[in-house]
Length: 244
Image 1 (spheres, rainbow, N blue to C red):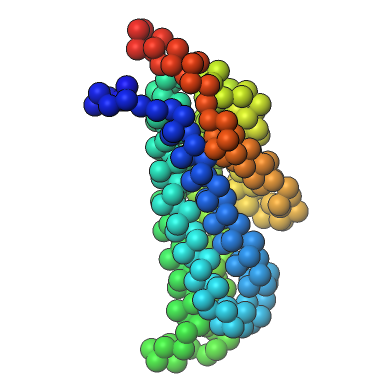
Image 2 (image 1 turned 180 degrees about the vertical axis):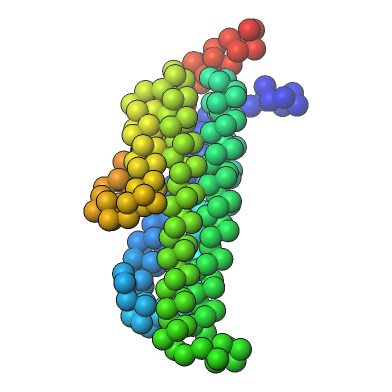
């Protein structure tokens, strides 16, 4: 039962969470690999500007994908809280909160992406700047977006560590998924802090530090969508918490 007396279906929630998670994975891949990976040329502001202005709709699609990712992930955070609350309500709430903070940071940093295409758009009030200056400013804006993305992954990584612990302890989800999530969280944290402390180290380790995250989240989403949770164990866990 939910707090308002209506029946709670963990299986239905689990499958909804898995479906939403798969959409998030797709939108993240579109934004990061297809759009930014295809348009942004590392260290070359002029080439990046030319690519963006040559495919402005694709670039805007990447921004929209990031924002859709954030919206859907808030729903995923709340569903995971509802599913894992019987294991440890406070930790489940903390994991959801950290995830939503990460979503908020990512959404805010999307402004830097929009700023870059505005700078390259040729508006009259920007004619006081030379084209090369605007290209450099646009590239700087994209770089700041990348740094903001890294900061968001600190909160997301911490949330993954807690989520992994809860899944491991749950009994109604496989323990190996909890282990994968713990490794994923460590990878996110290493990538983000290395990017702050030693950018060359982060660059040399990328994308391997983020690969565990992709694997863990894909496995979790597919498991929730196809298998769901062990409802018998989930019910016993919830009853045990209620009785205590």
